[in-house]
Image (cartoon, rainbow, N blue to C red; front, side, top):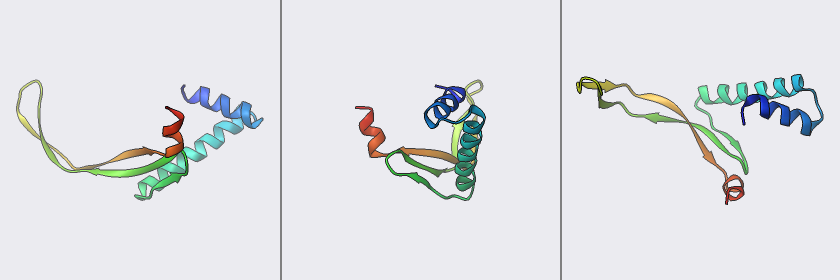
Length: 90
């Protein structure tokens, strides 16, 4: 399922236009992004939690030359599924 499929499904089930569903989806996505930029968790009970994790700096290897390189520390998005979502997949 891609974004267009999801927007279409939201529009159909909520009995709204695809444009309205697109705006709602964009608003949701923007709110999650904004919260994560501020290092906040976004928790939806039953579905899961979006959060930010930190990766430490580490050493790696260039696969072409074998030379050692430094990989900088960085923030990465993380999703932890909720119990209801996990149970739905059993």
